[in-house]
Length: 73
Image 1 (cartoon, rainbow, N blue to C red):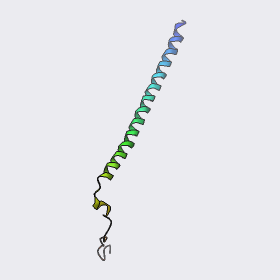
Image 2: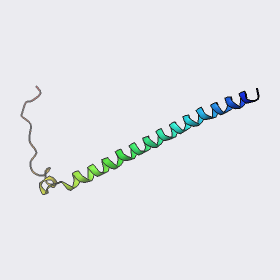
Image 3: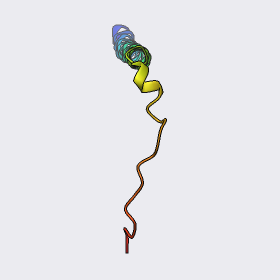
Image 4: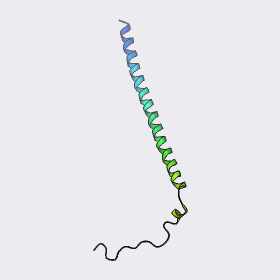
């Protein structure tokens, strides 16, 4: 009889311990995924910036295309 409460207590600790372990690993995985997304976005933006040509810097220069007279009537 003295073994039964001790066995119940151990089972309760094991289930809470494993639940905390699962929650901990899940949070670590989510943190790694978020960090990967941030680093990937930064690397992509740097790659796109380095691939510019000299013409890209002057793409807004010059005459702007004018719309047709009378559109939207």
